[in-house]
Image (cartoon, rainbow, N blue to C red; front, side):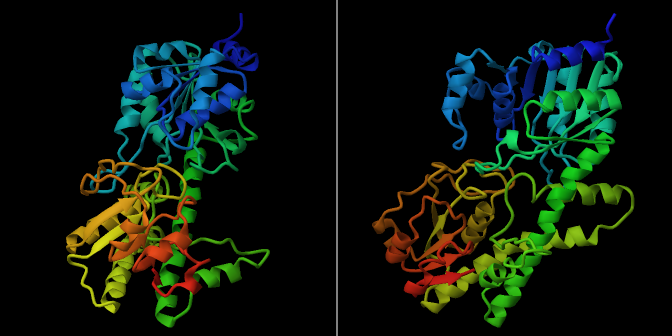
Length: 442
């Protein structure tokens, strides 16, 4: 008689295995698309019934994920969605894509991962593969998820299987859809790893097996810490070069002509998104638990966290140059999303910029073609605002326009023509800056 792992392997091989994705957000929906395109049947799980209801009628709630995807999934009968977690037993593979934020003391908040693991444990049956995709610190799968699943009474590696494969989603980047990004896979044991590799292989361009869950977890942390540290370096150089009268953007453009030994990173008003502002703190938290310093990582975090204040200081200087105080000035923030051309506000520096301006007495408003209403945020207190129409009259009524996100939809010539003063933290106006004297770089 075939073993449990062999039977699951056969279901994966003939694509009769049903893939369940828990957490239907910026990671979960593209992942579903990858598996559906590969020919698998899927089921999506989310505690937000409103999201489930919209998906079941073929409607997307994320701007860069077209509703056409959902309509096609439903028409092909390859997808359904539910908030009923007792249905977790219906899937042969369960991929966990839930949030892993930081708490108020900037320590890892694994409450969503733990809650999901408990729900899985309550429904766990023999023949299921569980894969954690949520970004976390090395050791989470083994030390946090595994003990919870063990409460089911089933044995890992025999009855069910457990692996970690970090999400690598780049929201809004059409060049790197979920299926076109190599997938790193580490298992709690070799059987679990091999089953996870077999599952992902038809859905992604390449799988990269590694020795353990810990290696896969550390891989994700390394990727984003690498970006955090290098962004911190160019952010620090920006402040230095500005004092020396040197344009950091021109310096980077020149440096990246070197065909080896250099990768371009760009400064900005602060870090945003789920990964780069958060992941390095997972590593520094883990290091503190082992009584080891991570000075390099922590310094990078301090530099990046200071950038919103630096940008506001440039706004203050620009207003002073035209004889206006910040207090009472009307300041428009262009862009509330953390990066261009997405509707993702997670950890967006725009919210910190708004807070700092409000503290200084500015009258703020914003425009973002992808975010019609400001969402409430865990760590920021900003007013309930709606995106203002970007008309000539609106721009002319502002004392300053602060460019926080360089969306492709913005017509920089139009903005520069009608705004009294622009402070650009993204180098978005570089093509028109030579024509207008009202533009300042930050």
